[in-house]
Length: 116
Image 1 (cartoon, rainbow, N blue to C red):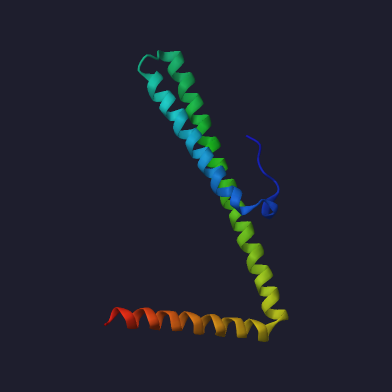
Image 2: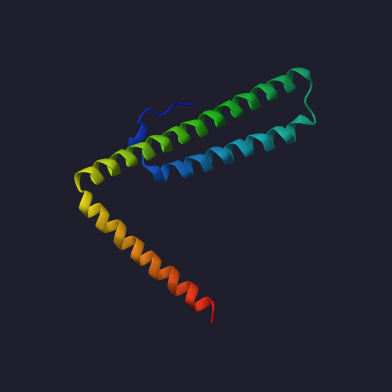
């Protein structure tokens, strides 16, 4: 399986489908193995076991790759946010205050309507 080297440049929306596809392929391989293991002999069983071991390793590598890609994107987002907050401190404070006010008003409204 080719490994991705593009890091944070990969679109984050592709991580979910890639993981889902890998999981479905892995499950399909396991189901195929289960169907065929009842009639396998020694050498055939060893070959099937080797194939399953390779698929497990591929699935692990894929999950690790997606996790590393996600972590790289999270680090990049944190760096961009940190840079913005340091360059625009008053705008950042205003946005946080506005978001807090809106969230507080929403919570107060929801909790007020539930107590009646």
